[in-house]
Length: 592
Image (cartoon, rainbow, N blue to C red; front, side, top):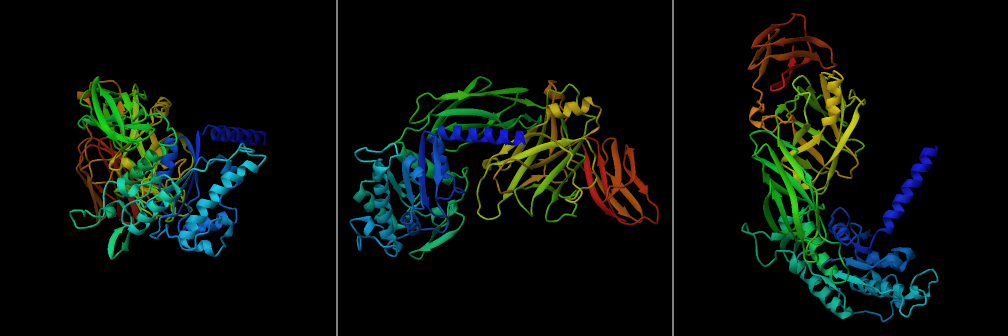
C-alpha cells in the first residue's frame, strides 16, 4: 500500500512538474479536422513547447462551441487564465461574415440565435474577448486590477484546402473586420482546386480518406490522419509560421537514432532516423564515415534517411541543423551500423488471435501484432536455436519486415510501441488459449508510421547471451503492443513467406564481413500420403520433428538428406511438421 501511495505521489509530482514546464498554452475549438487523431495541432504545440488544450469534437460546429460558452462550460476559469492563444477551426462552408442579426453586445444574444453559423462565430469572438477582459475583476487572476484584463489572442483558420470558397472568402472578411491573424491553409497547402491532377481528379483527394461534393465537384474531405502523415505535418507547418509571428518557437535541434542496427552482408543500404524540434523546414548536414551530406527543406519529422553501408562498420553523425528561427541548432547522437556475421531463421514462428482463440497460425505466411483491444488483440512468437550463435557476439538483433498496417476506422499513420519479451521454451503450436505468459520483458521499440516496408529491429543482445551462458538451447521471443495508443494491425513477413524479407536473428561478432553466413531461402517440401511423409530439398543436416496440435511429439530426429518416413497405419489426425537448421526453416500442417 505504501508503495502505491508513493508511486501516486511521484506521478503527481512528475505530472505537475511537467505541466509547469510548458512555455505556452494553446486552446483549440473545432470538429473532425481538429480532433487529436489528426495531429497537426499537437505538432504545433510541440514546436512551441505549448500545452495542447484540444476541445475539438467530431461532428461539432461553431454553434456547439458557442452553446458551451453560453453555458460557461467550454473552458474553466483556470483554463481561460492560462490560454495564450485561442485557435478556432470551424470551417463548414458557410458565410461567417454575414452581418444579418449581429448584436453589439454578446450578452444580448439568445441561445436560439447563436445556433446560426455566422451569429455563433460573432458570439464566440465577443464572448472570449469579454471573458479575458473580465479577468481584471477576478481576485484570483494574475490580471486582477489590470487596466484591460488578459490580452485576447484569437486565430482564425481557412479550410485545409481551397474547395470551400464561401467559407474561405468570408473568414478573410471576418479576420479583417476583427484584425485577427488568419491561418491560410488554402493558400499554402501546396495544391489548388484550379489545377487538376493528371488523372483529372482534384488534388485534395490524394491527401484524404474520403470525399465530399461541393458545386457538383468531388473534393477530398477529411485529411489522412496521424502526426506522421505529410498532410498533417504540412498543416502544422503553416500554422506554426503564423504563430511564430506571435510567440517564440523552441530552437531547432536534430537527434539521430538507430533504425538499422545490423544489416546482412549483401544489403549495402541501411537506415537512420533523425528527429527534429522547432518549426520546419529544417536544413540538416550529417556525415557518413566522415563524408558530409546536406539536406535542405526537410518537412517530415521524424525523417528516415537511407545511407550506404558498404563497409564493415558505418558511422553516421549529425553535423548541423538550422531553420528559419535557429541559425545553428544543437545536434546529438551517433549510430554505428555493422554488417552481420550470421543470420539465422526462426525454426518456429506464429501469432495468436484473441477473437479466434483456438486457431493455430504456425504455417501462415505472415505474423500479426495488434493491441489495446478487448476482442482483437494479436501477439507474435518467434523461436530460434542458440547452437549457431557465436558466444562472443557483440550484437544480436531480432528483425522482422513490416509490410502493412490496417486501421479499424480512419486511414492514418501512428507510432506504435512494440514490446519484445523472451523465454527459453520450445513450442510446436500456439493458440490464444494456450499462449504462455512466462516471458521476461527485454525492451520496446517505436515503429513510426513512415517505417512501412522496412525491417524493424529489436536489440536482444544481453538477454540472449545470458540464456546461452545458462546453457539454454532455445530462445523464444514475443512481440506485442507496449505502452502505446496506436490502433493499427501490424503485419510482418513470417519465415513461411515467399518473400525474401524473412524474420531473422542477425549476429555481429566483429569478424570479417566477407565470412558472413548468407541467409538461405528455404526450399524444403513435405508431402504426406499413404501413411508416408516424403521430405525433399534438404541442403544440410536438419532437426526434424512432428507434433500434434496440442504439442505431443510424434517423432523427432536429425536428418542429413532427403527422406521418406513411414508412419503407423492406425495414425490419423492433424499434425505440424517442422524442419530447421539455422539457415533453412520449414513448417507445414499434415493430415493423416
